[in-house]
Length: 159
Image 1: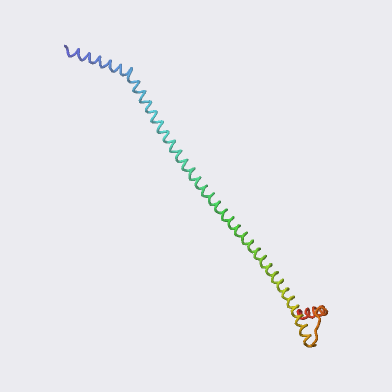
Image 2: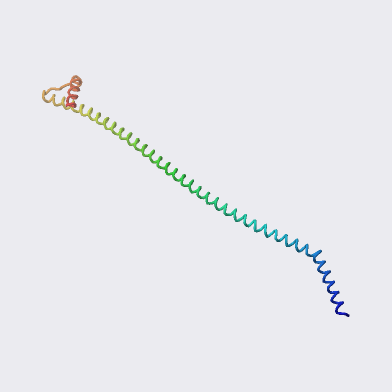
């Protein structure tokens, strides 16, 4: 065979292979490449969007944390204020109760003092009657002279 003919046939087969590749295979390869390029671009864009969303979410989280801390501080202050108010109310109640107890004790002491004075008056009256009867060596009737004895006891108590 002739080398020239072999070269021409090989060139024709090569040209047919190039034409077949350009006509049928190349569009499929280019389509797959374009599709992949598009997916990569979409993935990069989604990554950028995700990054921006992450930054926004972190900013929102920081704001929420600041708000939560402020709210917690407000609640804490309010609880302290209520606690102080409750303590003050309890102190006032205790002071009022103490004043009432002191007043009741004073009233009781005054009542006891009056009872003791009355008892002393009666005993003094009896002692006066006994003393007078000894001085006069006769018996003095306490019932008869009760008014006089009460008057005498009042004068002694005052004086």
